[in-house]
Amino acid sequence: MSVTLTTNAVHRLEAILKEETNPNLKLRIFVAGGGCSGFKYGFTLDEKQDEGDTVVEQDGIQLLIDETSIVYLDGIEVDFVEDLNGSQFVIKNLKAASRCGCGQSFTPADTGGCAHEI
Image (cartoon, rainbow, N blue to C red):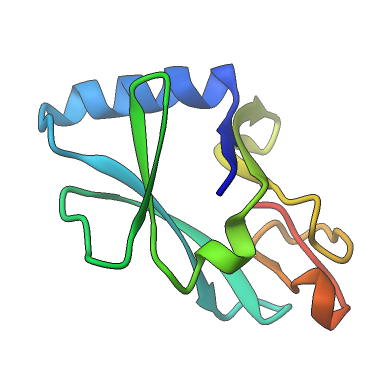
């Protein structure tokens, strides 16, 4: 299982977790049905690790990924960007079929179609 956090993502997550003051919080990254292409990425803070979760740790940040989402998230890079559109976490998924502009959903490469960053 390979998930990479950029330096910007690590710094932003450190700041978010510090504000929350709960040492048990981890970042949960998941894939859910929906969006214009069929799947969308999601982020939430979670202190509960479920039985089937994979835990990825980088630079002191722990990520939780459920057993369904792991198929779609292996090999991703999570970045934090600030630009004219605002600031947001962005998933770069090189295994996605293609990229479009809506920024909320994707279609896995094996099904063809349109992929998006968030």
